[in-house]
Image (cartoon, rainbow, N blue to C red; front, top):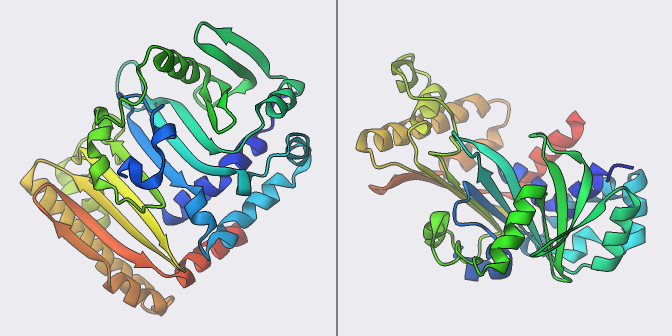
Length: 335
């Protein structure tokens, strides 16, 4: 039997949902142990502090779909056998995108879960569903049946009762080898994307850093038609994003609201000016578009700030609970 995908989703469902709804310095988030597994050459790194979201008044809405997934067929049986309670037992999720051996893009992913696990029960339940135990000079892992969207077999390694490492088999075995060779914590030492950790506030509930030169946010190269000649701010924004070198995002739950910030870095003055102008145009366009259908969004958009600091362009704003609730209700209604 193939290991159920919905069970895997349940482990990090709150994380995925919160990143979608909202679409660190490491010491701030208490994520040092999990982040120490991120390789220095990671193309992208994302963190979701599920424990922080758990204490938010919005948590019930963010987590309610996790309950639906966990109640589904074999997923429910799996959770019963293992005693795993994703909402209570998973505190943190780190996702690292690993680049292709040639060209741009992401071909492998490494996911680290931090929380409270029972490795023996989890391993037994996985093996009962077709997982096979593999041994390497650097540690054991469980190879799962089936493959991901890139054709890579999946794997899990229970490092300790507090830490679970998952992803493609090659990503997991590489992580175990790097750790055994003393190569862990390179990201935390400021190597690779780690040098940008100071851009993440200590109390961020979720954040992501993406090397846009290796994993393009918009893709392709900017052309003259991308530069807003047709007067479309959204088109101009996508054109400017193609020249962004780094993308930083973070969201912080505060009471019933969510503070968000997104920054695009570029060494080119013209690109930064174009990006700032395009963002202002898009926000203005949104305000006009929602004026009649969703007038409550107009004051929210008016409070968004766009700043060009000479290194990049940052847009910041706050989403009140009413907006987040409306978005999640719409997603639920479409299912």
